[in-house]
Image: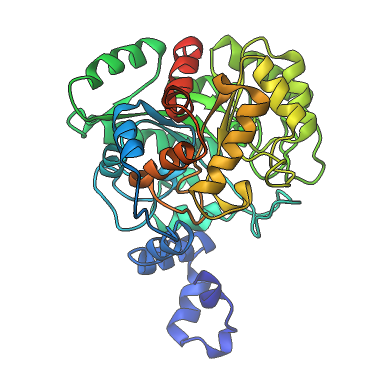
Length: 402
């Protein structure tokens, strides 16, 4: 919509607008236009991107009962990018507290996005554009977030903190193993949900490793070295160079381990996977991915990578979107899970939906029972399903959080 405004020549603009363009700075014009369309623009964008393309209809009685008894965890959702009140159920997007509770999701990773390129694809993305900027301007984020990726991450953490404090105990913020242990006890007495914070790409450090401590103090406990583009720390699976860790990236790994922050290998290049596994002294995870054996994409993991990540005690979260699993339903997700279990082992596979990440999904957070049902259909035992749906995440976080 901004392009429509700025794309006209001055000869066809009203005279008053010409005067405004001469008098106002570019930033002021952008802010003015943002105010004019903020009520509709971002909501329309999210409604188009974060769609649910089908609905959960019939679920087997065994799956329904089992789903209600399990601890269910999801390793990836970009919900905080969108200006929705997550304490209220929304008609758009995939995640909010009411839908998490209705779907019996006990723990949700809220992973913040700070920058993404125009024309995102799964092959090659340059770091020369920023499609997040117009969105956050339209959503009236603080002006500090317009120029600082770190500020964008911190602002999303503040929004999550506010939601947790205003939730009357329905949303619990997990920052440590002790927090998780206390929450597990509390959850025995009623329906609540919890979340922990992650960062999608170390570009959120604004190129300065000293900013890692600020993110840690803000509550972030997980971070991936890259998102869609290469940065000063590492190469991305969908970047231009697709290189490995830089010298700064190697220091980043050490600094994260010192703080017991979890290293997330989602989106990183094959060389970065190799480099991280070569120097990491603690288990890593992949928050949201597919497997190449069932969906051949450079963004997905090879069998060799599955084996090496699991051998180091790591965890693999299987995503739900079509480009990850080459299918549009729970059955395709379950097939990817089955292969990951066969290669990596039952103890190392989990859920990593990528809810609210700008992709159409077969269901929202309230419909994850469809995955349980699909795993039942594939012949998994109840105890095995319980591990995949959340037991493995619970064990991993108890062992690896601060």
